[in-house]
Length: 116
Length: 231
Image (cartoon, rainbow over all chains, first blue to last red; front, side, top):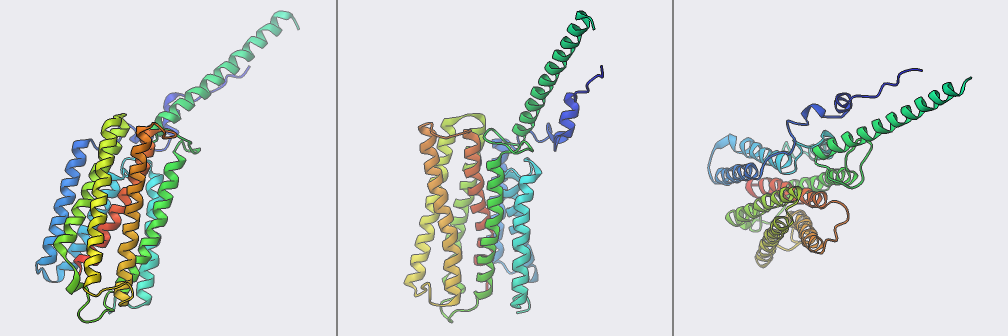
């Protein structure tokens, strides 16, 4: 009679997506860490508003856009838990985001928005 | 074939079936553990062990990017198409809109704290944080109504110019999304109070939370591109 091979616990976990990250990112940030992240986002918003009143020349647009992107991904990664969840959730969102960005950059380029 | 050989064969067969049943059970337990570690607390799961509800919500939010992308692009295209005295420079009240932005950002914090409390099974704190989130959302919408009213009194109607049409459509759609979020929050508090949430409480709170945070990230873009960057 042939001996049947049943997978061990380690084999099952190794075959599961992100099994190696299982213990590293188990629950995401704590409540205190969420408050710290909120304070950082609030400070970034304050800096944005301050920059809109200040004259920083050609840096104005790139700095403001950079801060906007930082805030955006701050909320997506930490508050929406993308950094700690299964990759598939984030990928579904990024596909929509990337598609939207691509389609509308092409649309704005067609209407000569960037050259105006 | 002797009776003892047949008996041994049957016993071996029973052992194999039992071992296989145990293996299947262990595999299901591990799949469930891993799914929980990725924030899935219950409900129907896909073959990956992930929540179908959560997958659907992320897919919906991805599609919402296309909706708001279209509205933001249209506004960017038409933001200079206005009369001399009724453009962004004359109308925007940056301190007021900044305060609104802080209100919405704070509501994102209270929402994430509600999700955290729900994950811990702390129903009382969950309901408190959800209620505070709804109130902050209400404050944001009230601010938006006040802003719209002010603009209208200054002569900026929906059909005044391409700028006004695209502006009111973009911010109006966002306001409607916030309002729908508030309704979802209030309904969720009511359902949690009456224990009428079907499935897992934590996952349901998380789904509403994802929607609410999405509304916040859309405002992050609107606030910078529409209000802070001058035409």
